[in-house]
Length: 510
Image 1 (cartoon, one colour):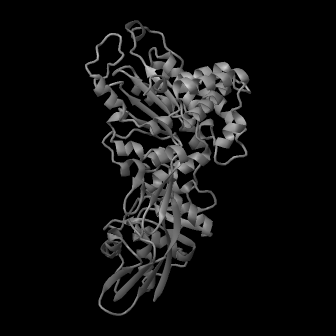
Image 2 (spheres, one colour):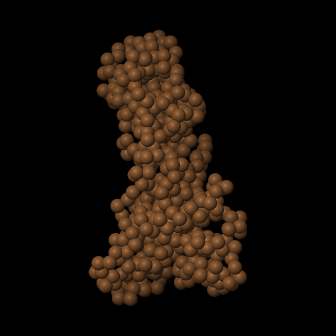
Image 3 (cartoon, helix red, strand yellow):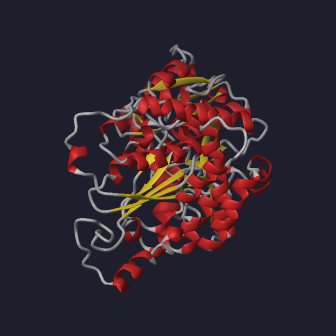
């Protein structure tokens, strides 16, 4: 007897429907799985068989063939345990499951019959809605994640017996209903605050400019100057995520298995801070079955690289494409996978190996050759893609011991929100551009016109600092953001002056 069950799989960030055909026939008792299954899928036969017995079912069948279609795409993971078990019960005539054709099934089975959480549920749920299925059965721990998909019945099941009772019509399960907007808005908070930072007014201004326009920023300073403290408080002033951005970020974290149990959405912009020993595959993504890396997990958020020169040179160089294009392409023999990677790069480094070059109170122990070699670990093309370079000086004792508190993150965040609203209005007819940093060359020509005085300043900067065409474009983008912060319709001299000052590493002939 033949039974068909619907499930899903993910390749890259794209989900597709998997039709699981289970045929119970004559022969020696065994389960054969075909359709390019990986090791985890092949092992499902032992989990399924034991889970059925421990759930009170007595499968008495001969040869069982399980086909995972389409057969030309590799299937991986334990996500097919639950649909295979349901299909086997139906094909063997043990249970009649009239609702089986109307729902997709996902879930890993424990030997006891418990249904365990799996990854990639959100993109699969979105796909099931697209193909027109009535609903989806998922592990109880994944129900909030799938429940954010409006217009799709989502039922969480705790064990195999409960799933079978529901599909047979003997048990009624109320569909999960997520109050997404209310929950989403109430969780966009953070404990870090800019008011905790003593001094560093110039650095805080540069960070606010960077966040207001979505610009990449590099902070250079001695150890203990506050670079990491500044970076870790950036999420507290980032603009609130829209629901569409949250779904984009959640889809990637779901595929990577990074969502916590009972977490429906990524409600705060991601802040990823990988260690400098990370590999290029860990940063960019990869593997036999490509998985997203840190640059994609930071999508719509911040990627913080502390001690930038300590990263391997080849790891830093792979950042060029995502910084320029906003996505990562990973090519394999059978397909090319694209992962979105629109993030704000925040990098921090010391000025030399010992960390005290240029420090007014501590002498540098490095030779000129060592300092040059240290700085040359950051290539010119990568540095060109970082819009803002600032120096973070040591904080004086008088500032550290002062009881005065600076501006709160909430105050700064409100200014950032106002600036981003100006940009959203400017780019409302573009689906690709959401902030000034994402402007194309044509957008720059349209929205970054300079008055005559500002044009002379840029011309002088290009000549004296020997800037590249890319650096010129990024100066215009930063100047556009500064003008937006000041509520100015056009870019004037003072806006360009400040933007040029943020190319400190060009001024010191990096």
